[in-house]
Length: 99
Image (cartoon, rainbow, N blue to C red; front, side):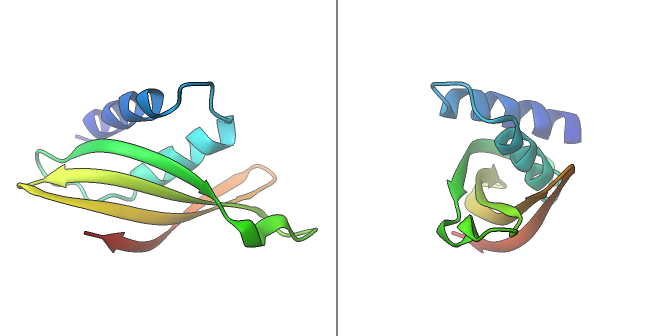
């Protein structure tokens, strides 16, 4: 099931970006997608990266917000994650769910 989710995410991420996306952006999306609850029939519809304007401080980890639109059981929701990038570590921290 996770393979289907990740494959759907890759298709959505590819469709969302007309130009090549930053590798860290893709890794943030994958890290966030792994945390979406596994429900039979879940489909990832789209994913977006939004830069955090407050992360420009020197010495602060690179930070992005990831939004993933999903559909399951006839319902749709947008999961929001805070993605932290520091050296070789990428962490996606759940931030909330928008309906």
